[in-house]
Length: 437
Ligand code: GAP
Image (cartoon, rainbow, N blue to C red; front, side, top):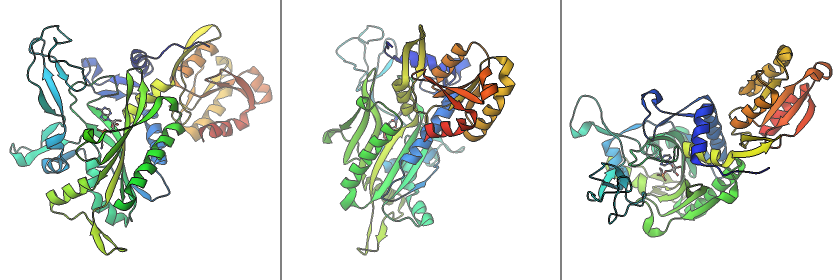
C-alpha cells in the first residue's frame, strides 16, 4: 500500500463532499472564518465532546458542569483583562486594503505587500479581538457588552454559585463546552483559526501549595486523552512557553502541539492561572470569591489550573491524522482511519443485493436501536459501498449475503485492512460493542 500526503485542500474538499462542514451562509458566498457543521460533522463533534467529558474525570476531585452565557457585560471583560490586553497587532496595506497580523502573517514592513506587491503600509496598531455589542436601546457605556472570547470567564464569575450549590470541596473542577467568538484579523486554515468556535475548558481549583504537582497531573492526563482517541502521538509535542511570552494571567503554560502539514501548532493550552482571575473579579465586582479553609482557618482565593482545547481545532486535527489515501484491489481509495469512538457512523449494514434488503433489515434495526448511528446502504456495487463508508471513517461493515439466509452469519469487513471475517448475526451487536469500548 502506498500513501500520498494529506493537504488542507483535500480535507476541505472531503468535508464539503461528504457533508461534515459547509461554509456558513454558503448560498450567499460564505463568511470568512465561520462554518456550519452538517450531519456527519455534528455527530463527530458530539463524539469528541463526549470523549472529552469522560477524559476529565479523575481521582483528585469532582467535576461540575456549567453552560454559561455567551454575552458578558463590559465590566466583566475589563476585570478579566480582555478589554486591555486581548488584541493582536495589525497592519493595513493602503493600496489593496488587505489587513494582516504582523506577528503571524510574516509581514516585513520594509518589504512590499505580499498581496499586491506595493509598499504602502499604515502604522502597526493593536486590534481588540472581542466582538462588541450593545444591550437594549441605550447607547451609553453601561449598555456595552461583548461576546465571550473564551468560556473560562463565565466559569470564574459563577465560581461561588457553583461551589455553594454543589457543596463542592477543594480541589474540584468546573468544566464547560461552548461557543467562543474572536474577531480574528486573518482567520485561516479552515477550522484552525475561526471567528466563531467551540471550546472545551476545565478550570481546576486547588490549593497553591499543590498547584505545580496538579499542573503536571493535568499535562499527563491531557496527553493520555490524545492517545486514547487514536491520535498519532509521534505528531504530538509539548511546548513550554518562555516566561517573557506568557499571557497576562499565566504563571506557566504548556501547549499540546500537533504537527499539521503547515507545521507544529497549538492544539490545546494548559495554563497555571494562579489566583489572577478570581482576584480580579473579586476586586471589580466587590463580591468576595475567597473560600474558607477549615484546616487553616483562613479565607483564601484558590489557585487555578486550566486546560483548554477547541472542539473545531481538535476536529480538524483528527481529520488530518485520519486522512489516508491508499490502493486497494487495484483502485485508489480515500479513507478516514478514525478511532471507533470518534467515527460519526459506527457501522453499516450492506445487503449484497437489493433482493435480500428486507432480510438484512432486522440486523440494521437491532444495531440502530442500540448504537443509533448505523447506516444501511443497498445501492451500487458492494465495492463502491465499502469506499463510501471508508471515506467517512465507518470502522466496520456487516455484509449480508445469500449464504446469510442459510447460516445466519454475516461478513464483517474492516475499514483499515479490508480484511473480512464471518460472525453469527446474533453476535453482531456484541462485536460492535467490543470495538467501541
Ligand atoms: N481560556 C484560555 C484560552 O482561551 P487560548 O489559547 O486562546 O486560551 C484555547 O485558546 C484553545 O482554543 C486553543 O488551544 C485552540 O484549540 C482553541 N482556539 C483558540 N482560538 C481559536 C480560533 N480562533 N479558532 C479555533 N479554535 C481556537
